[in-house]
Length: 195
Image 1 (cartoon, rainbow, N blue to C red):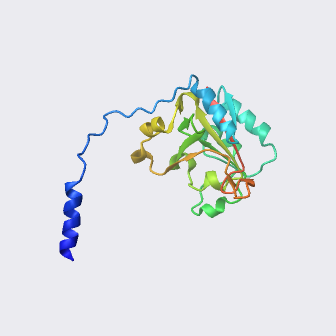
Image 2: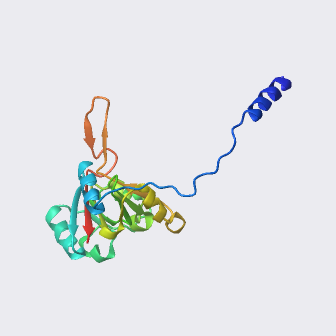
Image 3: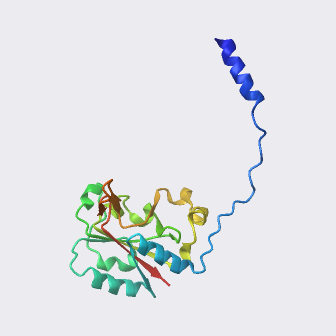
């Protein structure tokens, strides 16, 4: 039995192709003439809403206009903290189940898929962007990159630990092609892009 095994292994070794060097530079170029416009188009196509605003004071005004009746609001951005009323100083994320709106800053937007990179530092609780009914993410226009390759080049996981790309709102479709929005996360997503 061992001789059959050795015969097979020798045949594999004898027919092993030569190793080729990996290319030194990978190029995954995206030729978007306007990365911001591409991001907006992509996010709208997947069900999100995008607004380009001049500053955080305009974000505050729009939050009051869009969500006038929500009472449980969690905000992790210090500049907008006075609009929030939910206590995020909880140790058990189950205590966040009644959050109606979460407002969280993001680090990078990705034009090709409408995703935003958010770390645990911005979320404060890993469950927050997924347990809330409505999610607002805020990014700066200059942080939007063309594709995931560029986003991964910028991410420093060793500095931030847990992070995730969020593109939404959450949705799923079964084999009968029934679309359900909010199945695994927020029912709506609004992204404010600060110029």
